[in-house]
Amino acid sequence: MEVFRIQEELKNCCTASLTNIFIPGTEYLPTRLNFRIWKLDRKLKNSVKKIVDSRLQSKSDYGDDLLGIMLKSYESEKKDRKLSMKEIIDECRTIFFGVYETTSNLLTWTTMSLSLHQDWQEKLREEIFKECGKDKILFHKLKLSLRLYGPVPFLSRETLQDMKLGDLEIPKGTTLIFPLFKIHSDKAIWGEDADKFNPLRFENGVSRAANQPNALLRTKSLYWPILCHDRSDGRDRHDSSTFPA
Image (tube, rainbow, N blue to C red; front, side, top):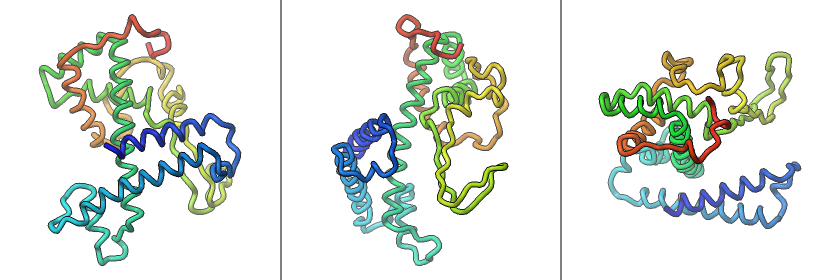
């Protein structure tokens, strides 16, 4: 799909820009890399807009999927529920990136870690063949993969007003960055065995803040045929010392 191809190229360009020393304002300079990023960004917006326009032109109902719901909001007469076309396009771009990049990374690292821990791989296979649909161990393993090899390295938020965080005064408009890799490996949070391969640490949940999120349910269904069809063994091809024991 063209959207995914453009998105992948745009991601590579943005990643390349991160390797440079960041100087505020350089993202607006007419450099070769910036020109490429701007061009890809326009192409991505146009591709997504074509998808949205195609749905808008349908004479019948817009459908009950996420795009259909957003288009109904777009035509809503209630101002507090109305979405602009820009907001719809931005939401579609976020969804395309989320379902493609993060899920594929999660599946990749889950397979990698299972190839290094054959005992857990066999437990998962046995569970799936016996109780397909329950998959408690698989769900614990996916959570562990998200903690150790999360596809999202950090979160960033901008303060909408002056605020105070502990003794720190934070003015309006400040960008806050939360390093998820650091948080997910912090022994003060996870204990002294934070770097150990132990899916059962999630047996009773962490905080129940995200109980059975849809993204993980979809990932579980994707992983069933992988484990049922074959086994993975990466012990002879990777240095296991770089992975949790």
